[in-house]
Length: 477
Image (tube, rainbow, N blue to C red; front, side):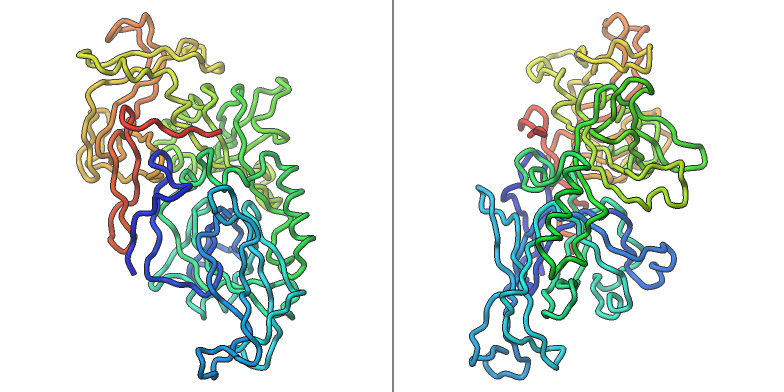
């Protein structure tokens, strides 16, 4: 098995990285899911994490395997029962204008006495699964016995990760459990790679909790053979964050931040939701500020004010079951890089000045010191590889870290990048170069050089981000 570059839609040189695996012809349906919670990879890990389900929202259908029925393992002619011509159990139900599969028709088959054989396809035992749906599978001993995770796996796949899952159709007496898991593997690309404005996943995701809940219930009602694996109560949607929102603390003993609007404003951060909780680790991860919660939440506040923050929200009524202070809505921040860098004029960076200050048409309403905001961009890019000392004396660390989200081009100074433009964000004061009255509170780099994509088998660092001044960044719709 080898890894190759995959730059087909919706992957773009702007916001999509990733790889596909060559030399594989899966028998089942391959889906890419966004996980809602951690997925333990061994039975012992399940005990440690106390997780009973795999819950994830479908982002894409990269492969429809050629699985058919009837099938007999003992048959001499390739396992096919020639008395009854085989029919496919997986069919494309719809595609978009680019030929990408957006929904899949799943058939069951008549049950026979052997666990290895399949009876004829049952055309009445048919359901459809779609992008944006949430799947729900119980974790049980069969998961571990069948070795569905890559050999040697241990620990847990974090929440809000992208995983590739292979699913096989079941027989027509499965009582609503018409799909079963055969393989699960984590993927290198993050949710950023699936949410450019033209991507199928972005177009398929609901924009409000009401839309998401209604969509799941309609899908489950129309597909009784899969009703028990099509989640109806837990869902995901994507939304723009209201510019008046802000990041606040929840409680000192809880490792969560909250995105909310000022009390009495009559506004909500996203439609229909008053409070969104973000785990510390997720705030740092999706802003590329590992180990720097202050920097992460500062970038989120700036992005909110710029109208450049989206959130991927998941709802689960169990989120605050043990701690009522938390919300039933959790999210991860997604910074729209192009919208955030709107003040920066590319042509003005071609100068002999060491840096150029670009006034921003927005401010931070909850901070009087940031009523006047600008982005100061240093015109000479610097190089910084993983393991090198950071190019910033204010960080007392010995080496750079790999960016947690390699497909997001904004990185903190402690993250590795090939070549980056340093950016300071804050109050420029009088605006004079190097003015003593300047008040910059955020220091980050814009990764300005491509990083080649390497498959997991190669042991390399995943990621490819493109250059400002080289390729126009694709924005969110």
